[in-house]
Amino acid sequence: MDEEDFIEFLLSEKKSERSIGRYLRGLTFFSNYLAERGLTLDTFSKSDLHSFKEANTSYKTLPQVFWAIRSYLKYISNHDLFNATREIIGQLYLKDYRIADLAESKEVALSFRKINIRSAEQLLYSGLSVTAREELADLTDLSYEEVTKLVKLANLARIPGVKKIRGKLFYEAGLDTLTKIASFDSAESLHSFLVNFIALSNFGASPPLSSEAFLSFTLAQYLPKIFEI
Picture: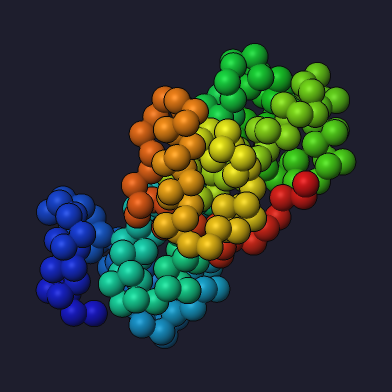
């Protein structure tokens, strides 16, 4: 890696000196992992990303390491691995995204806590199918519709940055699955749709930046469609 050129790239991305330092340390950590396996930053594969994640689940700053990897892959224009890294970042944050933040009331979060479901990740993978969501509704005494809404929001949160406000925006705009987000002709069309929706509905939040819409659109196309309607 040409470190000086990579630093120039990060500066062009408006990264602070502190962030650049974290990114370089993260890349060094990942590079050392690869070197032990006879690989480099230019020869690793998608499976190596997942192996690295599984080998370092207790590493507290693992999400920061993957943000560094993501920036490096953007720097070298490796779009496939760039998206794979974004998928993993979404997985890491989904694990820490609490139902208490996802739901609109503490009572709903408590209903899931009683059956030992506390994170959006647990909720998503416990409610992928219609039958599973029906069972969750019975166990929590919530309606099937309420459970399905929460599972859909958890599914949308697989896209990094789509949490409480952005998730609610997509859901209320009728884009409640990744398939619907990915169905637009382009990221620009998605962005225009969301801007118009907010203007007409008084949603109460600013529209996403065009760059946010692009990232949501491309990752919605890339991610496996695991949710069953």
